[in-house]
Length: 338
Image (cartoon, rainbow, N blue to C red; front, side, top):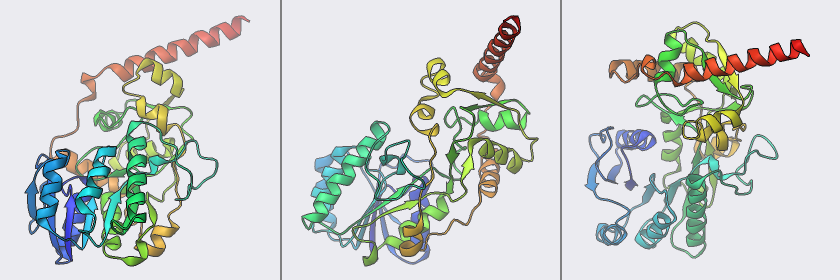
């Protein structure tokens, strides 16, 4: 197959590229050349900015027909509109990487299925919704066959795990040093994590697969972990003692640290578990890398590349824990007085 990947060197798309090359497919990558993940040997590379829409669309016309186009970096409504102009009649299959965040949260039922109504948590997810709608309308008008894949939290060896305060690797350093870990709420909302290799195989299985046309698929992890379990398993993977978890209400975290806790407020506080039966049936999707094994791989890569930050240089969490526990002590004293 002749395949064009818009992206190709990101977390998921680098793994997609690797698998396709190993399958001896004819792969071209279009990207800005700014990722620290190298393109896989054997792929053709074209550097450019897809948000320079005129140049991008002119290039697509010159490149001609592709059996499959995989869009891994569509983030704005204009990206979707440009993709329609660029590839209408020029591909046998357009695959769009969306997100599970297109749904309303909290959901009315779990696990969330692909036919649940749109919601949108933030500008990122609302933009993905608008792109999906643009592409679905284009498909209905005969522009190209379309498949939408919605990954959830996907991780890999090139970055640290997400946590209550984002993606800083000080989280791992704190666990390694036996420091307490802040978890939002009471830690009982559910979360999933999927290694990029498992997600990538689903994208590859969709390529030129007529059974996936017009469909939407979830590719999340299948360990339904509470955030407490999530943290404890990170410690287990690192060979560290089980950390003391300090629970602080989400609303307080957001008021104290609106930037650090932004994703907690609009996403992490809600359960994120998704039905994967469609991906199993049509994409042969399998969750093969457990969270503990995946964390071991992440931490090894981070250690090898000196990417774990020193938590001693960021006193924020220790200061917050101290303030929270002092307030709790005052409340207990007040209760005893009453």
